[in-house]
Image (cartoon, rainbow, N blue to C red; front, top):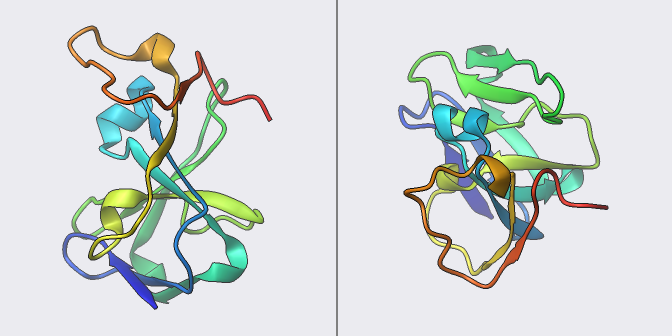
Length: 131
């Protein structure tokens, strides 16, 4: 079982398997909320263990696709842990411990700040990856 939590521990979750994909989002919104490293998990592999009552949602507006959840106690960006989609992103930095997963893509590179240099060979997309 892979454990995850917010900074203060008020929100806790478990994953039954390693996320299927890891991507970096460079949009101004994800950068500002501190959730640029996104691990994509399947609904059946994710379980919220504690703290549902401490989760606040910031609703997405186009061109952004995903709502963002936060711990209302410490402010940790959680990704979209309340999603009802079959697969959804969580903040990879909220996973406790280390996981064997490499970055697969960079999205919204059109919004990447000039001071940030992408240092891997992962695919790059101007906005959301094409499905």
